[in-house]
Length: 157
Image 1 (tube, rainbow, N blue to C red):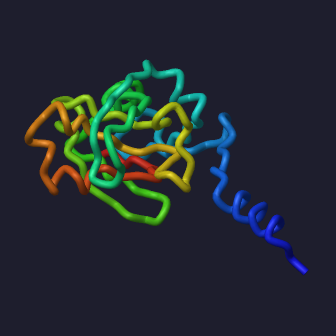
Image 2: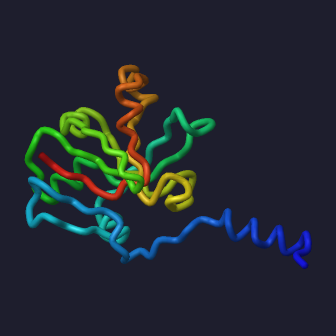
């Protein structure tokens, strides 16, 4: 018969973050990019210059501290050419994002929040994060829908 103690143990296991191996592919780049399709691991993404961003979101409390790569650096590193990126999430949510967003704003592919690596249970392993507190125009629902979490692919067109 299960005890209260074993119930707490099971709850702890269910609520523990799911780890993603650093060399396991987590992002696919397709479309108008050099050598497409490309699969990238967390290690690959950590090789890009890393940036910090502290900003509020519509789905978290306070102002989390995000760390990750600039999306424009990723696209430039793979010679992306186009006008739109279709970002797709693990649950097949898709959003078209103008490439101009990545040039105009320091949009990051967040790999961690508040010092902890993002996992699929907490919007990871990659979350597209805009610097919404730095630009009044980003505090608009049109931009909020572009914050794709559980990002798995970017298709440049």
